[in-house]
Image (cartoon, rainbow, N blue to C red; front, side, top):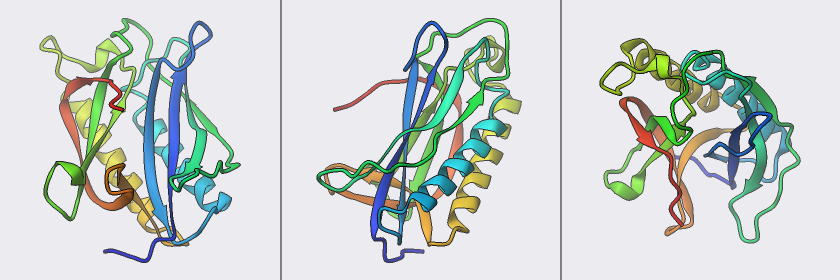
Length: 194
């Protein structure tokens, strides 16, 4: 359901360990009726922490920490840095490591069709134990990620002030509310497009 949004925010989730920082980075965007609202950002960060805690069996352990809210900004020009409180989650799996750029994919859908109205987040690095011989994620990893995605959407949609995860379009300069998400069974390669 569309609403009168006042601001769109970007929350960066980064991953690192004692040997390397920024091993994996992904950004979640959300819209809110609140402008430059630290409390709304902190609430979304807490919901993202719940999400990352739920998918911890998929994520690599071995000293890796996922920092949720390592950077929080508005998407206006110039961006406003929001003084939100970062949260952290440790990966819970030990054992063999996949290359850090190999990630699980969370695909997001909006109420509109077309490439510009879909989004994705790369969740990683992931543990080798979350994949089968074919390189696809196990059924348990996909199911757990899907449940966590559904819970994340429901928790953010229930917020006050009214908020929603969104797909940010740099072309349009706008975020469109996410209506559903799908956990993909295939892994993807973390990449940046500028």
